[in-house]
Image (tube, rainbow, N blue to C red; front, top):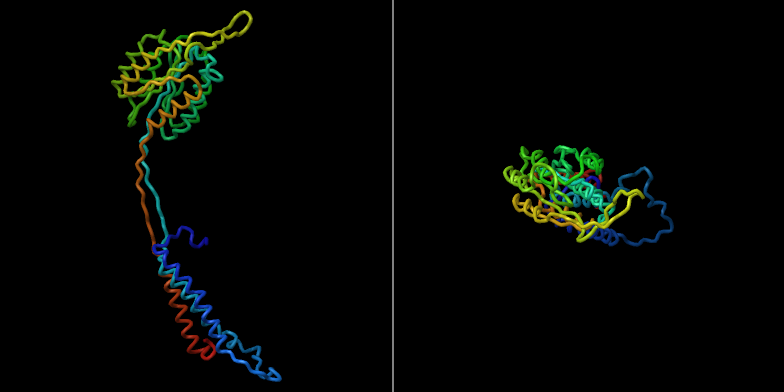
Length: 334
């Protein structure tokens, strides 16, 4: 019932006593039948109850009042309580910077539709699943820059991520510069955990900072780096602009896994290799599990006893029945 919404019962076992209610009603009906006799009369006119005499018609009121008092008493014995609960949550979010390679080789189509778009889409899903964390975005090719600083406004971040495309900066693969820029964005964070996710499909061939030097910088600022090498094993189809338009050529996949693994080890992170969309999505899921935000929850409960009104109602019904039986309806109530 809507009246009992938000109400708990401390002793719900007393509800079994409701079985007494139909037994009491049945006993009363049986008793009434036993008290009635059979009398044959040529006419019943003399025994008809006058229409203006209401009291004899209310002779069953006594059992009704008693049954209602029993019902109220059973509810009181079950101890209804209003339950109010609330919680205080403290979320220690993690600061994460995603450093994404956008060089020309990221247009290879061993991922669908290509490495760059697959990486963007899967990273965006990762972002949406971590609403309590500040997340930023650094992109790099021949050089690097911050596409979005650390923010809790993930709608803005996602929009900026969706705008990323090859050709925004000079081509090349400056892994060290990309990592250094990401570390610079997160180094002053007060978060419990500082993480960089570095995604690339090649080897460092540009920039003024070697990747391992950037890794040492990350280590000094307690930044953990997860590195992801994207690309199938062997050869992958690359789009190449020719005089006949864009044509695809199978080019060898050249990922410097040794350097990426060393970056991860130096900073306490892990290196992953993704060879297709499904594998890349699984890697982000692993990172998500490894870097879960810590939430401290304190639960509060407040309960208010509600049995007293039912006990009072039961008492009043019994008193009312007693008074009627011995005053106004004396001789009419059973």
